[in-house]
Length: 65
Image 1 (cartoon, rainbow, N blue to C red):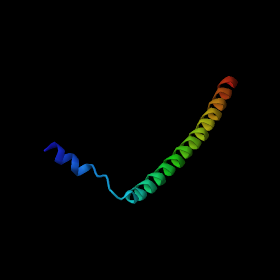
Image 2: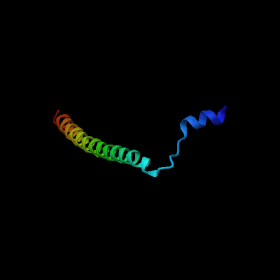
Image 3: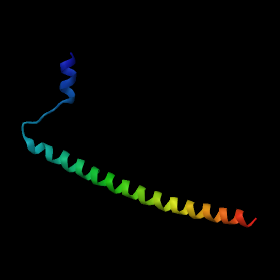
Image 4: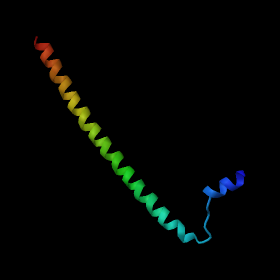
């Protein structure tokens, strides 16, 4: 029974050209993930800079009082 269940999920085609669409899809998602990661890092850096400027402004305001 267990081998039958595994056969449903494991498929190794004889014709290796069937791997090409899967490789292309994987590559597209990999590129998308890298672009998204870089975008998140850039947004995070901008937000950290804004937070630092706000913190400095608040500290200057506190020092004056």
